[in-house]
Each structure stands twice: as C-alpha cells, then as structure tokens.
Image (cartoon, rainbow, N blue to C red):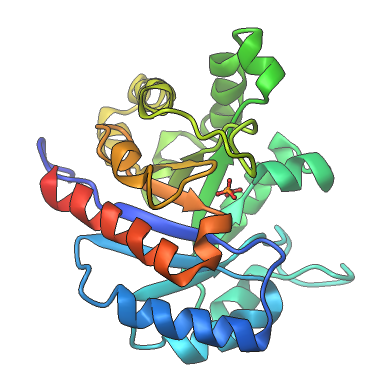
Length: 262
Ligand code: PGA
C-alpha cells in the first residue's frame, strides 16, 4: 500500500539510442559506476543498444546502476527475423525497457496498439516498461497536447486497466524537445505531468500517486534540478547528455538531491 505522503523515488534514465562502441562504452560505464555510487535516493539506469547488453551486465553487476534495452518484441519466440524476445533481455539482467519512444513511433511505424502489446510483454517477463508519450510541435500549437498524451495513456488503461501501471514508469517526452535544444520549462512539463497523474487518479488514486513520471527532451546538467524539483516530475529520460559521463553523473546527482528534498 502506498501511504499518503510517501515519497516517490527519482530516476535518471539514459537512452543511448544508436550510439556507442565497446571501447567508448567501457570508459563511460566505468566512470558512471564510480560517479553515482554514493547516490542512494535516486535510481540510475542506462538503456543501451542490444549488442552491448552483455557488456553492460559485465561492467555494471554490483554497481548501483541498472541497465535495460530500448525496445522489445511482444512475441515470446518464433519466426520473427531481427526481433528480440522478452526472455532474451531477462537473460542479460535487464530490469527496464523503453516502450513507444517517439523515434520508434515515427520512424519504425509503431502504434498505440503495438506499443501496448510490447508494454504487456515486458511486464509479463518481469521487466519494468518505461512507456513514452508526447505531442509534436504542431499538436501543441493546436492545443492538442492533452488529447494526444491522454490518448497514448488511455491506450494502456483502456486495454489493461489502471493496475497495469503499478509496475511501470511513464515518460512525458514532447517531440519538439527531444533531440532539440529546446527543453520544456519546468512549468510546461509539470502541467502535463499533473494532467497525466490526474487522468490516472480518475481510475485509481493510489496507482496515480505511486507511478513515477519522468520528463525527457533536452535534459542537461544545467536544467535537471529545476525540472526534477517539480512535484509531479520524478526524474528524467536523457538522450544526448547520457553519453557524457560528467554530464550524466551531474543529472543523477540532481535527481538524488531532488529526491532527498521532497
Ligand atoms: P535528448 O533525448 O535528451 O537527446 O533530447 C531524449 C530522448 O529521446 O529520450
């Protein structure tokens, strides 16, 4: 039972996207493991490309950094060339997987339906899905943010009910902020995070109070603390800045500070 007034943990989740090499990963992961070892109030996670899961497992075992993947197939096994099944991620110690990232939706034709199926497959394998939602610049300009984010959220709740969010992390990632140098302001992000939490609360107040909601889109060491200090922002999903050790350590420190304070 989530007690009234109980704190949610904060997260710094790195999304490496299609970046890295054996040599650069080693240097990055070793620096990160040393740099975040004293942060106990925040969870640090790296989501790496599939070929590097084994390396992440070897280098991060025993550290306080968890690792995960950037996608998953919703099917358990079979004739699906190029796909990676949930149990394969479990074999490599993955505790998290990104689901429905905007780059998967826009460039690989993933839909609300396929994202929902992947979400459930991850959970059934014991992996925590990090479910991404967000509107484009045009949609925001047309005042459709709540409609788009609400639809993406409902794609889970309508199918599976609100309790499916008990073992999940949500990420609000406005498309106009991802990969740009235009982060949402803490107030802009907070407004959408509060909307997401209220919409879940209509179904179940305890699930709404407990589910972590991360912000993603041009998070840096300079803006992390401001964002993570907002009441409904429980940390970040970080792309480019997660590839630089000092920067990602500083962002994790900000998550840790914000968690210790709230
Ligand atoms: P960015 O990417 O931090 O480079 O904007 C965030 C993401 O896509 O998860």
